[in-house]
Amino acid sequence: FLFIFFSFLYIFPFQEFIFIVLILKMALIFFILILSHLVGMSHAQLKVGFYGKTCPEAENIVTNVVRQVAASTQNIAPVLLRLHFHDCFVQGCDGSILLENGEIGERHAFGHQGVQGFDVIERAKQEIEKVCPGIVSCADIVALAARDAVVVANGPSYEVETGRRDGLISNLTLAANMPDVSESIQILKAKFSQKGLSEKDLVVLSAAHTIGTTACFFMTQRLYDFVPGGGSDPSIDPSFLPELMAACPRNGDVNARLSMDRGSSEEFDNNILQNVRSGFAVLRSDASLYEDVDTRNIVDSYFGIFSPFLGTSFEDDFANAMVKMGRIDVLTGKQGKIRSVCSTF
Ligand code: HEM
Ligand SMILES: *[C@@H]1O[C@H](CO)[C@@H](O)[C@H](O)[C@H]1NC(C)=O
Image (tube, rainbow, N blue to C red; front, side, top):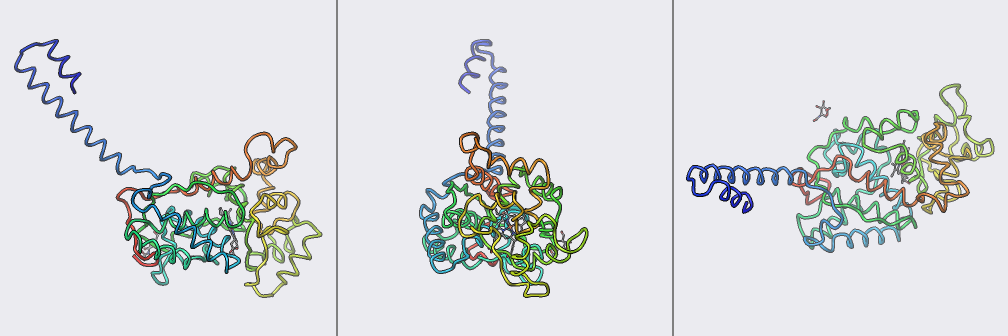
């Protein structure tokens, strides 16, 4: 302002109308600045430590709740990690999967079959509300809990961006597009790409299956009704097939559970990718990562002789991909709201 003011004075000294023009110009610039500030606010970004001043204990509370529950509930780490993925892939990471709003609720979508962990998020939320009510979103708690879950399973830690707001819609039809085990690698790539995630993200995020289990429900087709050809999926290593069939017998209990990372399903590591390479993938979608030239090269990149020294590690790539996943279609600034109970509007 001062610069403009004095340069005008210098060029046109003591001319009244110039001063009027000048004042109008300054008003205009002022107006533009205010406008861009408002626009900037509606484009508010996620950032690490968003609650640093408003609720400094929030992250510790989530970490402690996850640790406490993990001490008594064996499968909680994979459950919480999966919950974040399913939250982010439907209408963005907005906590909408947590809402309990009857039959049409997103939570009941077919694509969310087996998703759990809601009670853990609710418990963390209650403890946070006691300290700083109305500040921390349920969507952020889901993202933080997923990170803490990975750490519980000895995976990499990473800084979680926060500042998400909670969504206002829960509708199961919106979840119809969740990636499915039986989909081709092309479709899986396309679905990740629609969310701004690369082929590499697809590979390393699928490697989240390094921990946890699947219901036999998701194995029936692969073992007994494979398309094309019927019978079992020919990509399964012949020595592994009897083991899978024993765990999930034909017409057996579809709710029986099976580790997804043979030999290492409680430890967060890249063993799952080794299994994918050698025909020991459990889920069909994981096996398909090795049937496309691009995703196969990405899987292999973690096992070259020089890969420990060149490029990035699986753990780093996973952490980066989680941060990216946590940005999908987030609500920020004044969008959405902060719920006080995660299961209700
Ligand atoms: C490529 C798309 C994906 C497909 C088709 C897929 C499919 C599945 C299926 C069918 C299960 C078994 C669910 C059950 O029976 O309870 C499962 C479990 C799991 N998924 Fe995925 N998933 C995908 C991507 C991801 C991503 C991106 C993550 C996280 C970053 C993830 C994390 C998990 C975890 C941790 C479990 C174990 C849950 C438990 O033990 O309760 N998945 N997934
Ligand atoms: C749920 O979403 C679908 C698709 O956008 C829409 O047709 C339907 O009316 C919605 N249902 C409710 C109850 O809002």
